[in-house]
Length: 435
Ligand code: ZN
Image (cartoon, rainbow, N blue to C red; front, top):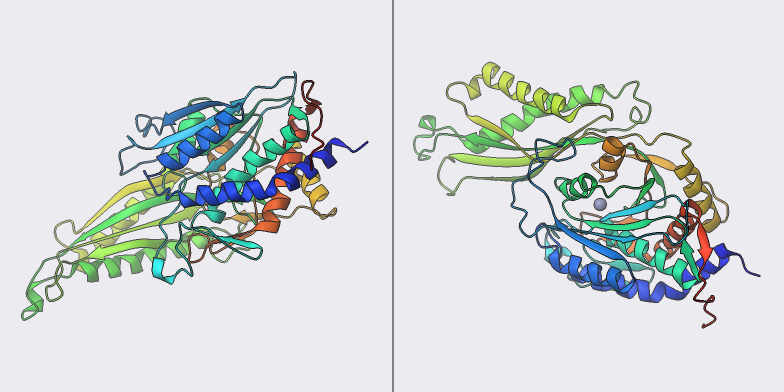
């Protein structure tokens, strides 16, 4: 008599080719910000076909500024759709679980530097390439196929399970915030982000900003009459590095962060300025982010940045005169979290991981960036486990996910769901005997 675990693992193997084909189709949807609807339709159909009750809802902008899980946005959410597929338990008393994934992806960067087009998935040996392959469509597909494996093994979960497919993770977190505010929570959340088969012990809070500098345009024959907005921006970014160094120094004594080189990175992600090669530029815009530590209020950190910019404008003569700098908040403004050690959810994941890794213990590490798990952890006090496959070059060129790792992770997710929610034999269907 094979154990339920063995049957589930065999089912993941049996379904794995189909899972990779499903993932390839999903990668083919160019689910950039506000362009996720087609990918969501594909996921909605997949969940409906599997017997989930599917809720489809727009990202909510009405709660920005009102509900602490929400962050400022610069886009309209008319075409910004989230999904939750829900399966109620057929038994009783099992714990509930929500798999949380984001379907949005970041732009591909220079497409001509990819070995193959970023939205045309390509398999090469044990790797699958494509934008979003790792971050995190592989995880989204894995959560669906982990649950398929349980069904295919002739079993069903004793607790309610959700498959969440949200948007906006890469910029504001407002997709997860909307799901949370609508009550899509559970006794545990598992987010299969690309973590190289490790558990995220803590993440950073993040605030995202836009800076605009206003120069004085002029002809280069009389440069002294002008002031370059681009030069001002470069100078301003230099000043901000001082703030970053102060925040890095704050890591001392912070248990999970003190050994990281830079847990609060200030990065400038976009910059543009000027409108003519031979004019002194009048305007420049830069956008970026800076991290901070769990337990700190994002609004307090934002006020610190605002005060710092005010200080620069009053102390650096280059910024003297009329207000030459405008600062605005344009994306995530959210606290980080630390996953408490030793929760039942973590113990359950540890044993599932050990079962699929020849007894090897699960490692934990710090991911110093925003994660949607923070919404559930910070505002819901829900154990939120971030654990997913081995990937390379996420947000970079030639992003790829390792298929052997994805198979192991899918098994771990399936065993985790089975052990966390509990399982029972399906009365109507015997365990499938087909090859
Ligand atoms: Zn991600």
